[in-house]
Image (cartoon, rainbow, N blue to C red; front, side, top):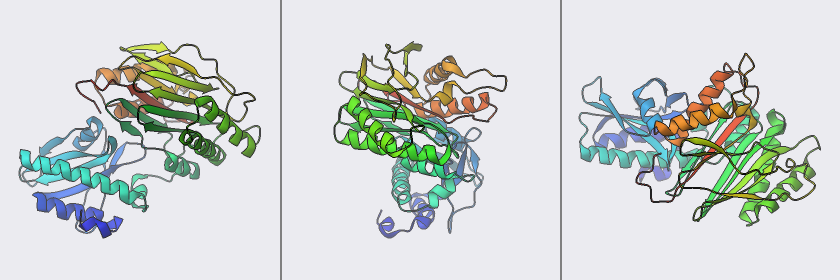
Length: 385
């Protein structure tokens, strides 16, 4: 911790090795997940052992990432190779490879504390360096995607009362899809938005919409007033052919009451006890930028453990080469299977996006994004993340 106060970001990997050796490691290397969450990419620097990229699907390191748990294997030098997830809260950043002659309970406790500190340093250094963003990209991001990724909150957030996880594709060319959220005391606010069009014009539209949404949310406005504010901004700054569909929602964590405004967007889906349910009918208002009256908020009562799916039409309208839609049933099936397999919510969404892409033979016709929100009472025995 003392060393990192004046540490340049490109020296972090070297300091990780040096500190790990003082703890008892022979080698230590941090890996970051790429934007598509397909590979783990080693963070290199002076004194760092050379490493190759690793598959998230086909390696022990990937297993640690997918399950968010420590995995081990014998090392080639003799001893133990331990893979520990790098987490910012519950947001998966990558993994840390920790090679030691043995792995005692005491050393593992030190390694777990160490990996938490490494994660914090990665996040703080990422705020003023391009080093990690460059490492995570396996190909060039479009300008629109660059804007959208910088606009996003963490893809995963969790407390004992709520779990939020999101995913977007195509990772390197996302345009108009985005989401935002905030956990403030006993209230969770959420926006899922789909700006019309593609590329930079859609990214600029969604950026303005998210900025207006955050302003209204932080000013304490009610949902219809937030919708009206975003509508006013888009109508005033963009031509009439440019608009965005959205769901703007608010969940009371104490009561489980969900309120939402639907601005021409697909209706959220509810998963309860392994079954797909539709929320009570909520007539959608016109899209943001095209509204002429303030929309009304709808509401429903959730039960503990309910999972809500907020998504854009690029998910359910993903079309196979033979013309079949991905549809709500496949969407719900992916989430239900993930829950039955006790997969963490972010891993469930990662697998879902792989299925959506495979359904279209890896050729997305439209942006696709989804946010999963799970309400908890705080009394659950185990928080699976």
